[in-house]
Each structure stands twice: as structure tokens, then as C-alpha cells.
Image (cartoon, rainbow, N blue to C red; front, side):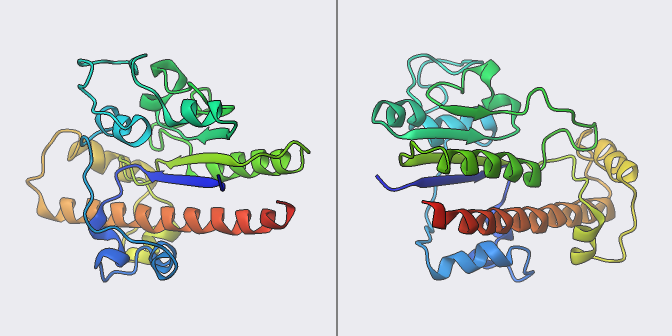
Length: 237
């Protein structure tokens, strides 16, 4: 088996990707991958939220297959468990509590980082993509240089596109430089609209969309950053 890297990006919509027709150039690096990759145009998710969708991705099963469950059912087998039994090194890095150790998603991983002990803020309640990349880079470097190299399966999951939509200013400027909000103001906007399910103010809704687009631009940069880091490590393999 060759090395396999699985990227998953929380709440990333198909219709914001240039390779699927969006004209706003929010994802230039991801778009560039279609020139050397297969692109699928007919996809189905097993559910619209984390607990319902990840069983399909990592266990090839439906969320309700063994009844409604809070924690991952022991009857479900993770791809990490299958690969580890086959001698493949497995590593997972993410910042989503619903696929954490607590909910049973750590099975079969030689290395599993779910960031549940990391310090986060109300405005950004997850570890950002650049921090995930640093963790992965540290592991890959030590693993490749460790002397007992085997093919690996690596899973990275980014949370940066997820609400509450408080992107860094430089990414906001890439979408609309006229937006000048502090992180506190962005969070208040989210709190008073989406969190309250109040979408009556169309201007606020459009502003939230732009903040979401800024996060999309941000996460595209993190994907590119990872590819660049990985390219530097390739000559060690």
C-alpha cells in the first residue's frame, strides 16, 4: 500500500469551490489540484452534521445503523483499525470534539491528536489549521526519520470554516476589504443572527456569508501549507 492522506474540512460547501464552478477564486490551491487529480461530481453524505456524517467517512456505515448513539458503537469498525491490523501506521489529527477520544473515535490510531486539552477561545473554539499542520509536521518528521518506516494512513480534519465565523483580518480583506470588524463584533454578529436563528436582516446575512467566504480562503491556504510541508519531507521517504 502507498501512503494515503485523507483531508476532511468541516462545513466546506461544494458551491464555494472554484473547481465546482464558483467564480470568486476563494480556493485557488484546492482548484489547482483538479489538474492532477480525479474529481468526483456525484457525492452523497450520510448526514448533515458530524455525528451523522463521519460514520460514513471512517466506518463505511450509517449513523443509525445500530440505533441512535452518542458514542461510536463498538459494532462499527474504523478504517484505522483495519489498516493497523494490516501493518499500516495510522495517524489522525483534528479539533472536533464529536470525533474525539471521549466519543470513541481514537480506536486503531497509532497517533491520535484531538486537541481536547488545548486552550481555545469563545470566538475561535477549535485549533486552527496552521496548528494542526504543525502537529502533523512534527509527527511526520519524527516518524520518517525514526528508522522503522512503514506506509502510513494520515487523516487531517480542519475546523476553520465552521461557525462562529471569526476569520483573521487578512482573509477578510481578500473577500471584502471594506469590512472592518473586531473579533468581538464578528462573534456578536454570529450570536445575534445564526445562534438565535434570526435571518431577517438581509444585510447581516450577507455579511456573515462574506465572513464564511474569508474562512474558506483561509483553509485553502492551510491545505497549501500542508502540501508544501509534505513536499519538503518527501525526499526522506
